[in-house]
Image 1 (cartoon, one colour):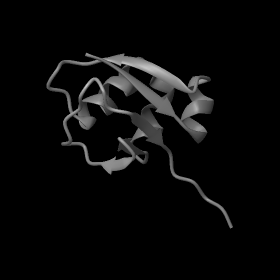
Image 2 (cartoon, helix red, strand yellow):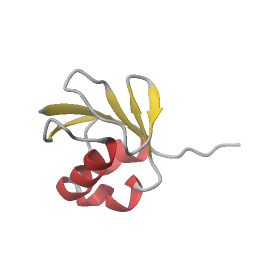
Image 3 (cartoon, helix red, strand yellow):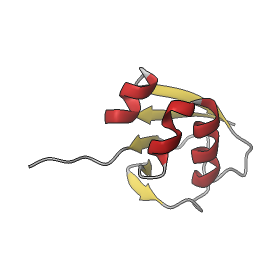
Length: 81
């Protein structure tokens, strides 16, 4: 299945795009997505461990299954004062 993954903040800056397409098997999980993103975009590899992955506007753990229709976002940590 092909998934569109939205990138925000530092992830968007590192990849220089606001979205990427990733191909995963039909039984893929959020953890599989993290691994594939790190492999396809090595500049993200150190950041992905601290990012939150949102699926359909809800934070998802790595065991969550994915569907082709899901809206997926990579959200890096933010700081502010």
